[in-house]
Image 1 (cartoon, helix red, strand yellow):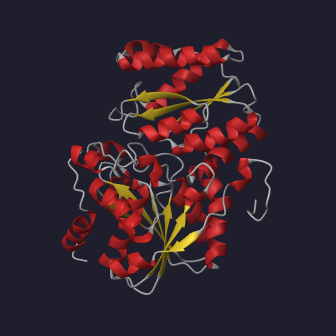
Image 2 (tube, rainbow, N blue to C red):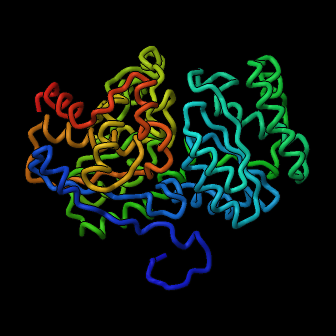
Length: 391
């Protein structure tokens, strides 16, 4: 809905129609001979691009009669999709449970709790196939609720969340596996939108983000850069644009993720041998979700934590735009790609998924950076890194 009213009926009406900002100071500082733009998604009411996805997945689930007001919404999330889901759930009266890796910022957990969500934390360095992974824990909770076959009270939900968190803390894989493998008949008292495998994830961007970008640039774009998380953003936007013109889609992936290895031709099993933990949140994966179309992506740039965080920190001082680490990664990847490939006189847009306010105690905090063996002199680091890249 267009944001041209003085009074709105609900917070959901404020989703979308986020601004595009020219990054002139960044262009000049890094001597980029292209027009650089950013679509700044923290102007959504929940503070990220995932508002679009969370709300759209639940809207479609409601139309398909997969959820009612008695349904408990359960989702593995890095935080932002959870907020999008919570915004919709608050309006409809659903309870929500989110499963988050330990590395995710406390700010995101507190934000989700502020919306009334229940939170479970899981180790971030486990296999996606482990019963300790956020994906399997979501299914375990769903199975417990399915088995009860009735609407749950707040105290009942709290009891389930507390019990599962205790099992995780105790590393009790035997009991978790027992619950996971128990045969239970599905019903609509619990629902996992599953942003990693839900077709409505990329479709949300095909129907909202992409048309906005097309209108904002009148279709005159040459490159789109985006971090690779679930892949829904770049896949949905990319499909829309490639149906209409020849454009280059460049994904940005952190070291430790498997996307760039699979894109280069490795099997998932081979790629997992190169997988390792990293600190930047919201991008990279140790699975290949059904929501990403690697074939539509023209190329992938690989970045590391230092590059992502230094660029995000630098951007706030240079452009006054406070964004998260995945945005810093995407911007670094865009500049690196354009300069290394000697690309000039093109229009390029980068997607900034969320605000830096969710990371103030993390990479915006010098002490946290030092504790994680990261440098804090961003300008020197970025100069050095770009010299090393010979750009």
